[in-house]
Length: 398
Image (cartoon, rainbow, N blue to C red):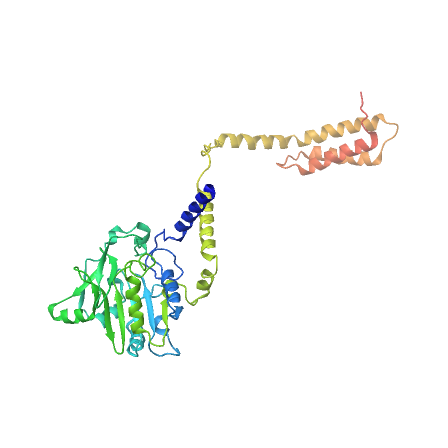
């Protein structure tokens, strides 16, 4: 019984480790990201709270075109990078439909830990230069892989502080995160009207009215991600905001900016297929392995031995020997013809074919031709030898 109890405690401990957010990811706010910077916990939390949550797979400007409720909708977008999966900069014309959508009575919640990376039309149109950044995030402390992408990783247990909110409650946010403050004395009234939460360093959560709607900006990567949604009163503050802004509408989590939206091209469609990222990584590994195998020796290089070149004198001597052999062609024909003539004379009767061939051989010898390629002499000797074998076999004359 004691053994079963110990095994149960061990299994519970292992299961607890699996359920805990144990690996760090960048601030994505993606419902498919179970790491520290994802929003899978937020998406499940909305379902538990009975909120009509959806995943937005189209650009923000197309968020609620044709929606049953033209107002009372909330879109949550998180991240420090571009709002487009292709890293395209937002143009001023692209912000106008979003502002018109906000003015109808809708809400946009922006979560970022790098306010300088907000799209320029958003900063110019909403903030109008009234706020300045205090103590921005130190990009030099980011890991190399994240710094190359312009993103930092969300820590699962960072140093935090309590940022009291207007009314009741407080946000648990990173102590070393960025803050906003009024840019000038004339802007202090505007800043205090927008500010919902902050600490001694400055504001961390702002609500900017836009017509009948509003835009919330949270300068923190911890509070509403998987890492910190259950910390302090973070979930309660978010619930109060959604309760205030949602009116017969829905809450949508922006997935389009993270590449989980509609396919804009055939390549995007292929990359979005299940298992495609793993296949691409395997293909890259095989390509690197092939490149390594083709360009790296597996054994020491063999010494190249340069063959000695022939001299001009050796070439002249070789050509002279060829010509010398060519001069022996009449002698060879005469020798073979002489052996055949001896056999003909020693036989009982002469052969007309042999007599004709011997006359041809005698004529070649008398001509004295010594070509470099004695093809005629070779053919004549071949005929003489064949005739001798046909008539007399291997017979010899002593």
